[in-house]
Image (tube, rainbow, N blue to C red; front, side):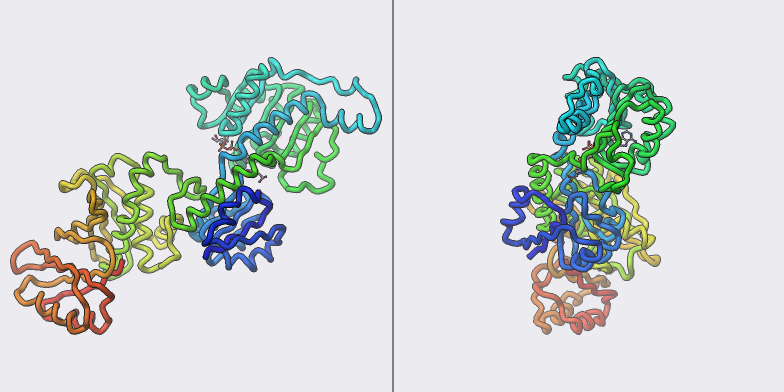
Length: 528
Ligand SMILES: NC(=O)C1=CN([C@@H]2O[C@H](COP(=O)(O)OP(=O)(O)OC[C@H]3O[C@@H](n4cnc5c(N)ncnc54)[C@H](O)[C@@H]3O)[C@@H](O)[C@H]2O)C=CC1
Ligand SMILES: O=C(O)CCC(=O)C(=O)O
């Protein structure tokens, strides 16, 4: 049974799949302090959060079983990604489900700012009929600067076009082509500051975007500009904004997000006549909450059940077409790594992974993770997974070399893995045979054909008559049944290998006996 903890309010309808799953026990415990969460997190396989729960290094440290943290939303700045990655915990988000909700709040903020709706409402309900103080501006023909043209920024651009606005967009990934399709003029932040009547930010909060709009940017802005932040507190410098309002540069601002949430009661934005505030409501629509909860619940189930998943934040994204090509090789890659680690006499210092045939057509780094995981898991067990495999290798000074090779040896695809340690070098090659599945086709320099599964005995010996018989009788005496056997050699009478598959693990004393047989250099048991 998998134990899943939901520690923030997340839509029940969205969580239905998890609640219905027979292999899941779902606990909802919201409003926990860090101490309380640290105390119970060790029992859980998955944690689902919105933005309130802060998943700190301390929580991650205490999360002994945790396999996945699911964020029902986009921003993952409440989760310590580095700590999660190092611990091998997958962090996923639900990037698409709240785009429209946040975009629509942004449009609402823009209109509220242009027409002073919240301020006018506040006065009108006191019984005062004040029309003079609330003369607004139209959006039509105004210049809107959008910083961050991802999902939300692009949707804002489409809607602002419908209002007759002229749009300037800045995003390091915004191409001329896409800008043209969206009806947006590519601009720098400086140009946006100089020309825009409204500026809205839609970037994540990163070291680069913290205080992206600060004193120097406000100093360049047009008098009367209006500022919107429905992205993250801290992208717009709060103090610099107040100064720009006082200096008469900024006519109004609308903030859904704050550096500290909730803001302290004496935060200068609260009750400021020119600042509209909402309590981080961007994603708070029924539709968005259902969308993000459904998306994240499905993904968490996939991860718990070891099924393919997407939207991992702490793994580089893999395009669907590349994933489709690589996925069938994951099991082969991991088993090859595990096979090789058991062949070697000591832990790996260098792993060279070489791909040939059709595998050279795609980026094989995701497959490399599986191979490295396979190698390292021999010594590190379940502490290593595809999320932290490269990190685990790095902190142990294991050098990973990935290369393409033109020598596919007649196979449509071929993976060769070489492991170097303490002056020893061992290698295997594997392929995926149509209709037969994964196969090891070469061990060191010897051609073989072995399915990488079950119990395998690898014998290095001298090619002499009688060896097979002696080995067979020791195994027979111990009640070990040989399922398949292959012998490989380069020259008659020279060094050779034997690969046997057996029906069950070989008792340790039998392994000892095998290793003492004449003309046998080494017998290793490989369990996959
Ligand atoms: N108020 C709320 O409730 C919500 C807030 N958000 C916030 O909105 C942000 C954007 O969400 P999406 O559009 O879905 O994300 P996205 O990932 O689709 O778009 C973000 C864009 O920002 C761009 N960017 C990154 N650094 C930049 C920089 N220095 N200058 C300009 N552009 C930069 C990226 O290239 C990307 O295109 C999220 O990161 C999240 O923090 C998201 C949903 C709800
Ligand atoms: O969960 C929420 O309501 C916050 C949404 C948000 O900020 C995000 O998805 O990045």
